[in-house]
Amino acid sequence: MPIAHLVTHSGGFHADELLSSVVLTRLFPDAELIRSRDTTWITPREDRIIYDVGGQFDAGAQIFDHHQRPNPLREDGQPYSSFGLIWAHYGRDYLRAMDVPEQDVEAIHESFDRSFVLPVDLLDNGAVNAAGAGPLFAGLTLPVLLESLKPVFDDPDEDADDRAFLAALPVARAFVEAQVRRKAAKYRAEALVMAAIEAAGDGRVLELPMGMPFRHGIEKAAADHLLFVIHPRSSDWALTTIRLGEDTFDNRADLPAAWAGLTDAALEAASGVRGTKFCHNGRFIAVASSREAVLQMAELAVAEAMAATGARPLHR
Image (cartoon, rainbow, N blue to C red):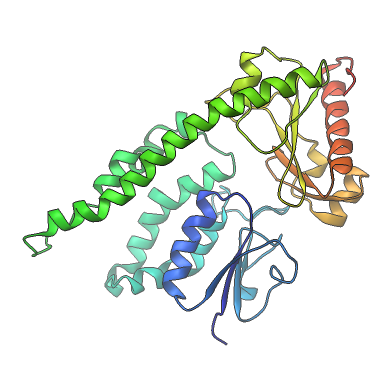
């Protein structure tokens, strides 16, 4: 049966499902790309490929998620993201679709996996921080990536350089303009975070009106007592941790270990909270269906963190 739909999650996106989509849309150009968390879409069927959502990894059933417990690992024990899973299964066909000679497919597949796919996998799983990764990310810096758009050495077209430059220009523009917009947004977010900190008082949980950059505002306000942040999303609520700094994945407090990688009924059973939906294996984000449920999760996370340090809990 032909593939009719490529299904990934709705809401905010990360590099892993975006890059997976690059591979899959080339291999299945007639398939419709669906972004949804609806169970009717993230349930495996012969005519769809599901990735970065669904809570399962089963290549035979064409579902490639990595958030569940146990999470899929490479032979050397390093974690996959959805991009790594998609590349492992479809990468060779993608290379053939790009007219890579068959005798070179295996070598290029392996080389690209180690130099490009693995860093994305590790970063997505919180297994490495780009700021301190050194040579691992040397080939993924923006200047290197932009220069990779130059023509190959044996392109015979005398206008190849000009053609490549004009093709690279909108890519470069997109990155520059996105960076400017994001920096401007951080200043807007800071004002909202400051107001939320004032409203939180001495509570351990900061409630924001929407998802936004918050760590800089928390540090600027010297709100060292805060441990977790909650905010609404399009159809649910998120509970997130607060990193200790820009160049680390260590948090002021992690979400409970018993929640890691669980979803829906399993997470409800582990937490004792009705309406819980998901907790990342990395224990830095959890999702619940309502504000009431996410507040209960936050209170449990605070209590566990306080017990671990022997500190006396403050009121929420």
